[in-house]
Image (tube, rainbow, N blue to C red; front, side, top):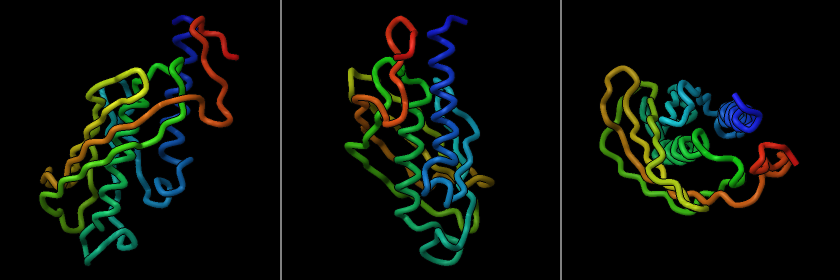
Length: 160
């Protein structure tokens, strides 16, 4: 593996860990990253009453936040970090289909299109045990510039 590839992989792993523990909401919600690669992202959202709207039912805003998180993660998991690392959501669309009472949820995200700075992701959320489709969503994100605290990766693979 070349130095540039190693740097890309280190950045991908940094973001995987950051998504799970470094983002306060994700850590509070207990989000678990089960897959993080260029094929997509799979996350588990454990059910907790603090995240519910009604007994046993996740609040719709929590579902929307996880769709945003998972779609953004799918973009970042396969991203070319020479093009930047500062991600901002610019559009979020959510469709709610059903509920999975008392179940954890599985969010399955893929990157649909990579552009110069705008990228598109899609997520489907299912009941963890029942596989019942709960919601889906589409997210557009902008990746421009570097995230504070991270050094850019140059085209030659050298950091700096």
